[in-house]
Length: 105
Image (cartoon, rainbow, N blue to C red; front, side, top):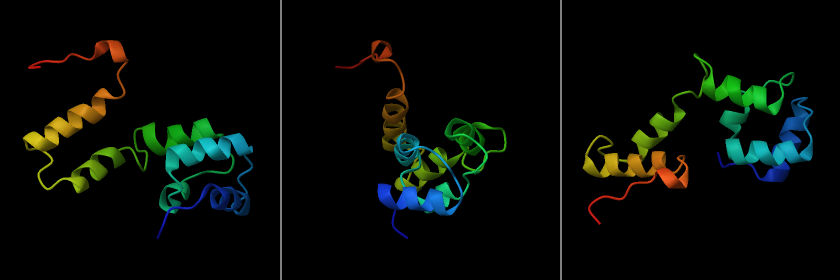
């Protein structure tokens, strides 16, 4: 199944009884990528922030390990040197720019 467009996401949320403003529909689209599987975890009575917390960050959150699972699926040898370098680069992107250290250049 392909990802939903932004318009389809808005219709999906409306159909599911999830009443969030258009701005938050756009934010949810940036977070969930329009992936119906991820969007199915959304709870109508929670705000967008509460849903993100429940879906990704709680102890038993259904998508807590999704990054690791996706990362492993992208590389044949995710623990090898190439995979570790890629993982380092991806994890470095979430750091403030001043914390980058370049070595061997």
